[in-house]
Structures are given as C-alpha cells and as structure tokens.
Length: 158
Image 1 (cartoon, rainbow, N blue to C red):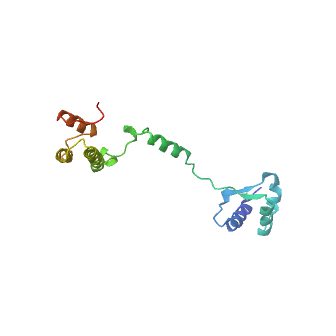
Image 2 (cartoon, rainbow, N blue to C red; image 1 turned 120 degrees about the vertical axis):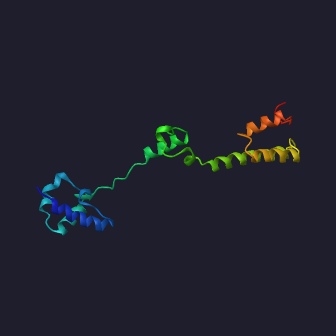
Image 3 (tube, rainbow, N blue to C red; image 1 turned 90 degrees about the horizontal axis):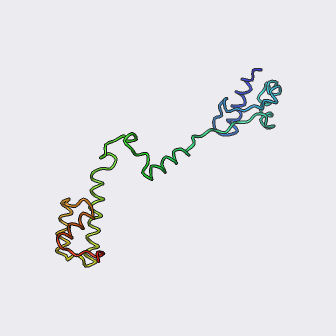
C-alpha cells in the first residue's frame, strides 16, 4: 500500500492548520485504518480523516537540557574543570587584571575596616595601603601576618 500522496497532502493541510511547517515524516497515520487512508484520493478526503483523528501531526522533538543542566550544576561545585576540560590559557579563564582587582579590592576593604575599627592609625593605614598597592601581599591573611610582625595589634587574637 503506497500512501505517499496521502502523506504529502496531509503534511500540506496540517502545515496550514498548525501555522508552521509539518514535514511528511511528522505525519502519523493510524495503522488500523490504512485501507481508508489509501482510498482517500482528494484533499477533502484527507481533511476528513484528519478531523476524525486517523491522521495527526507528531509533536516536534526538542533537545533535552537535562544533561546540560546537570553538568552546569557540577561545574558550579568545581567539578569537570580538570586539565582535559580546559580550552584556554589560565589568563583567558581568569584574567590577571580580574585577579588583581579582586585581590586589591578585598585588601583595601579590610584596611578601611581596620582603620574605622581603630586598629590602624591614619598614617599606618596609608603605609599599608601603599604596600598593598605595590603588590606586597598575596592575600589578606598575608597582610595581617606582616602587620603582626611589624607590631600592630589586631583584634580577635585575645
């Protein structure tokens, strides 16, 4: 039983009905009523079969995002970031400027808090601010240990 013409006509009718293209491969024909479909020669006959529900358009298959979402969630936890997954230099992934801005802003914030808290005098603040600007400290912890070796009393160690 050749139903290519019926399939083609059904695709054209369903495309008009849906308002978007329905290809011949998306046309579903009820296998129990193949004889009726074969006898449908005109477009009106095919239209009637569509109304009866013997011919339908299959839904469009989408691409599932489940796996992508799961991978993204794992990446946010720090997984899937090993050498084999990298496609770019360390500087391309986290630029030097971005690292520097993050470091200096956190150090300056810490210095301001220490000055406002009374742990640093304005002259000491200026001194450590300039040292931070010069890149003397790797981190806030490093800056604090340097201050302690210089004899600055820092709160919290009582």
